[in-house]
Each structure stands twice: as structure tokens, then as C-alpha cells.
Length: 177
Image (cartoon, rainbow, N blue to C red; front, side, top):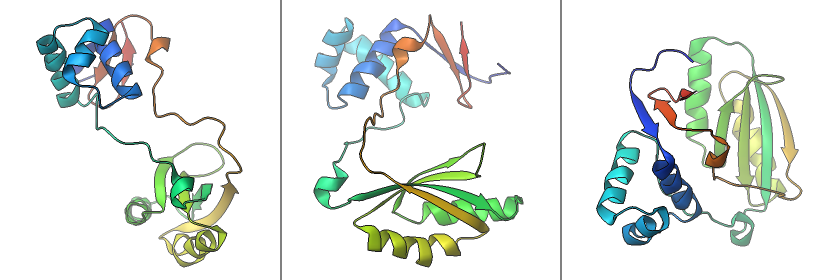
């Protein structure tokens, strides 16, 4: 699927390491090595390689937002007025400055961007829309959907659906081998 400058080949041990860490990133190297059937040193080397090659990009705690008072979650579809580079760059930079925006995706289809936004309540969400989002560079239209309940949410990538060894390129291009 295109030329790839550098590659990391993920074998079954690499995929098992990634899968185990997706389930519990706090595993010690010893416990992780036992779960994937490698020696601790082999496991540590593989883990270091996966991190240095950018396959594993970080370790995070999952936090219960509603328990902390972040009761509103919204998915917001944004259309920009024009698709000039300076406008899209300015919009993207403005998005990065807003802590309420937990995810921003450049998408195809009805809109240009899809945002995931959290707020403590509907009044705070409304204020965010009018005082911040509507004033961002290039915003032509906003359509929001408020989450009523969460049926499924998982940061875990389903590595089990991949067949055979996987080569991962520098630009996040994936080829199957």
C-alpha cells in the first residue's frame, strides 16, 4: 500500500505485548514477560523497540469523567468556510488550545472535522460553543450531538483481527505480509 521508508515487523510476541499493555499498562516487565512467554530481557528489548519505533506512543490512565463532574459529552461536526491551508492550520491550532476538546478528527462525509467535547453541564457546553467554538478561525457551521449514554468505549485496538505478521511504516501505513 505505497512505499514505506522504515518498517517494524510485528510478530505474535509483539502483538501479545501490545495487547497485554492495552489491557493493563501498569504490568511490570516480569509479569508482562510471563504473560507473553518471553524472558524479561527479551520482553524489555521488544517493548523498547515498539516504543522507539512509535508503535506504542504512551501510557494513560482511563478516568471516569461523570464521576468527576464532566457530565456532558458531545460529538460535534464542524464545517469550515474555506479549505485554504492557512484557515485549516489556524483552526487546528485553536482546537489544540481548548482543553474541552478531547479529540479532533479530520473526516470525510458531511463535515470537515469531528470533535469530542466534554463539559461539566449544558450551560458550560453552551458557553463553550458560543464563546469559543463559534469564534474559531474559519468555522462556517456547527452540528452537535449530546451523548445520552455510553454503550461501548475502548482505547484497545483489536490486534486479533490482523492476519499474520504486520509491517508498520513511519507514516502509519500498514501492510499485511
